[in-house]
Length: 306
Image (cartoon, rainbow, N blue to C red; front, side, top):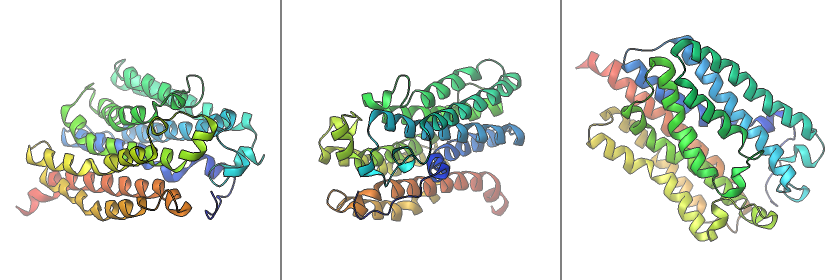
């Protein structure tokens, strides 16, 4: 990864707090629909948010540990995860930190069981298994299942789980449909990660989904996942499944434009390759926040001016 400024090795980079929108946006979506349905407990919402962030953190931390053990992270590509390959942190400490995040999430889950009953365990157990076995134990990342897991676990189950905690209902079609655009975008972040690391993963024998494709087709998949949320949201608005004000999220089409332009040089320009992930992060964060803001604006503000 020449010409890419290396990150500072340490716990901050291991936790990757700039990625936590992946947990925040789904919780916001589930919470917004629960608020509309008249079931919103601030304390429970905050606990769901903390639990989601801890699960995302656990996945980030254990990914660092798993990639080091697998030989994916090396001194040659230390610009992305230098903590273990440079000896700044011990592998055992990183592994324990990931397990601790999962353990605290499980304790929070007990509060949810007390609050709404046993059905919430469906979402809780799937979330813990998804985060805990990403690159350790089952290590399904290396079987090409990472993107599918992110789409289902974070894109769909996390907002549905949030709604379940706040309302006691195990399922909502509105939450599911409203979550679909974000599900594609958060999956695109992982797709960008796989494309950024395409050469290194290939050398290490890590068979992510992108590794099963040519570089060109992997990039097409990345761009499809980045863009799919826009026509999906439009279809939901036209069908009456999403409020008109959620169209506020279309302001992020400029983010999509920048992302597409960057992707054209990603294979030959190290900086452009590196930016595949941050640009997808930024678009997903902007799109998700504006989507929820538009949803709540239609619910709370629009009736006051009509």
